[in-house]
Structures are given as C-alpha cells and as structure tokens.
Image 1 (cartoon, one colour):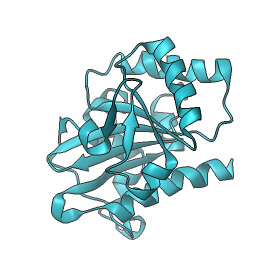
Image 2 (cartoon, one colour):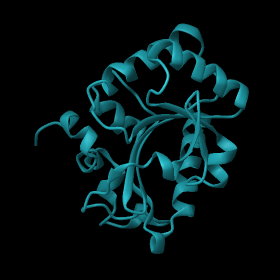
Image 3 (tube, one colour):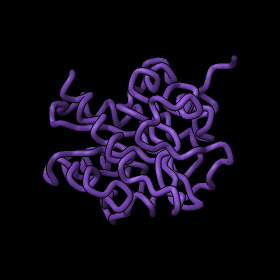
Length: 196
C-alpha cells in the first residue's frame, strides 16, 4: 500500500535529517520491508528494521508503522510472531516500535501486546508526531513507562557501523547498510542471516 510505504519512509527521512555525526547519533542500518521479510522467511514482515546509534550505545528497532488498519486477531497474530522470534534473541536493546497516529490507537496496541507478551516486554509505541519531529528524543511507551530512543539504546555499538546521512542512497560505502546485508551488522539478527 503506497500510503503505508510513504509513512514508513517518512520515519527513515526523519532519522536521516536528525543525524548528528559530532555526537555519534544517527542511523547505522535501515533494512526496508521486503529485505526484512526475507530475513524471516515471511514469518515476520517488519515495515523496516533500524540500527540506531546514540553515542556509544545501539538499538535494534523493528519498525511497525501503524495507520490503524489492522484489527483484532490480525494484530494479535503479529504480536505473537514477534514474541516467538524475540524470545530467541537475548538482548534488552531490541524492541518492536509501533509508530501510531494517535495516543488512543497506541494504547490499544499496547494493551494487546501486554495481553500477549506481558509487561516489560520488547513492545513500545510512540506517536508519529514525536518520531517525525525528534526521532532521538521521541518518547516510547512500554505500557508502564516512557523511554526516549536514546534511552532504549543499550547495546555496545559495533565497530563496522557508519552513520547514514541525507544522500546515503547515492553513497556506495553506505548502500550495504540499506538492504539485507545490513542484518549481518546487527548482532541480534546474525542467526537469521543466510550463509553466503
């Protein structure tokens, strides 16, 4: 659906525009929907997978851009699928981030995630206004507390990460961080990367 893809690309563009190389803050990896879905054999189809750097810490964020079209059992199935994959990934710096258009929709998503996965799980939500205005300072709600994107970043930063910036689509050194090859740069996803 084109409007959904554009809404997801808006998040990518916001992170690129907010990059602060002098503070070592920005995207290191952005894996789009198609490549992310192939990683998991279609079992999961995240809208994107982002490797985010905040100083000396990193975050792997499965991005779900929610426009309010998924309901009931479809949403519950998505949350169960994420739960089954993330149960095998031992990292507190891996989250599923639902980017929603309203706080009300976000609360509905968080209630569903809490029923399926319990409190304190990897599911967080933020409004699109927060993420598009200040992606690193955006407040993510986990059902109990709020965390900024910077605060969710808790893993050490891999040595091979470059910060992506506007124009990165034309940069041959950055292009591998923008497709399925970027998954090998995210330690949590390495078990899912097919052998060469």
